[in-house]
Length: 53
Image 1 (tube, rainbow, N blue to C red):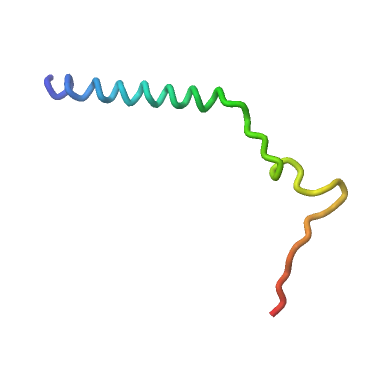
Image 2: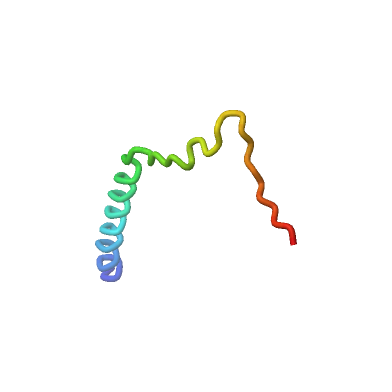
């Protein structure tokens, strides 16, 4: 019983901190990354760089 009484408060504290961090993470707006949106112009295909020996 003493072991349970000593383990529950730290576990609950970590759980509350984890829930708070998760809530803050979920409430953030999505990051606007210009490199991820449209890396290529319309009609332009990705150029593959091939190194010849």
